[in-house]
Length: 259
Image (cartoon, one colour):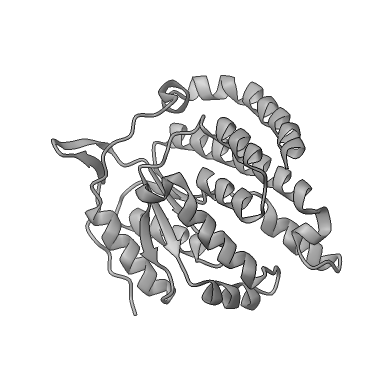
């Protein structure tokens, strides 16, 4: 089935009083196997095909890369290779740096950034892996530097469907019980009420159509950035990048102690 291209040229974020500002950030989040990467690519490509400046941005935490490495080395997955605590610390740091890089690029290009994962993915990961509440508090303290996306789509998929998709990839593995825990973790987040929940159990083309229709119809209220100068001005971001990275490294050591 071909994908329908809905009219979203020059999308804007609206309020009850009318258009407020252009849409700048769309995030796709959800459990492993929900189709985030596929759908983020399709959405960015569809927007670009309509003449809307948009690009795919991956904000991964390195778990898949370490999962591939683990397979090569004869281990079951990333946690089997590095241990739960070490993997969570590395994941938190790498995702933090990836989001910082994405926002830097967005400030320069002025494109719509279609985010493959965002900060809430780390909070859900910490909860699903049984990290202590102090670990999530510290992660939130670091990630609060970043503004919330204009729209966050949660790709909701049955854990059994996600499990089959992951197994078919052949380079990593997740236990079905963990996928259930991860799905519950997303639902438990305080941000859950702001998510646009998408049924992601269908084919990629079917899910893409739903996403495109939802994006065309979305009229979310604008959210003030917690750090507008940091995100709006490239020069400030560039000057802040080095000390922020150092702060993230320090946070990693604290996070390890809290797990």
